[in-house]
Length: 175
Image (cartoon, rainbow, N blue to C red; front, side):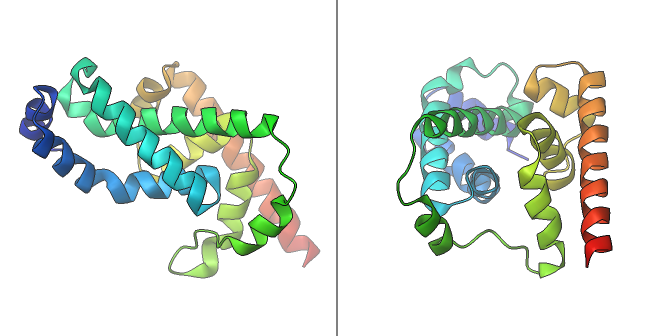
C-alpha cells in the first residue's frame, strides 16, 4: 500500500516521491500488464504509458488512500486501449513472435493451465477474476476501479469462475 504522505508530496509535484511510489508499484504493474498483453514488449509499453499518464494526472487523484487502485485502473485502461489498437492491425509474423515470447509462469507450474484459461475469458470476466484472485481486491474496490455496481462485479466473478470450472473440468475429462 502506498504511503499517503508520499502520495501527497507527489501530488504537489515532488518528483522523488513519485519515483519512490513507482518503485513500490512497478512489479505489480508489470505483472498485470504482462497478463493482459501476453508479451514483454507490449507489457513494457503499457507499463511506461501508465507511468507517464499517472505522472501527468496525479494532481487529479482525489483520495490518496486509493493511489494503487487508481494506478491499476490507468494500467488496465491503457492495456485495453492498446489491445483494441492492435486488433485493427494484422501482424504478418504473429505466430513466430508468440513462439519466441515466454509466457509469465508462476513459480510452481501447477497453475499454468488455470492462467491460460483465465487469459481466454472475455475481457469483462478476465478483468474481475484477475483483480479478485490475482491482486486480492475486494468486491467494493473492483466496483470502484471499474466504475460499475458491486452486483455486476459479483455476477461477472461468478460467471468467470464457473466458465473456468467448466473448462478445466472438460480438460481433465479429456485427459
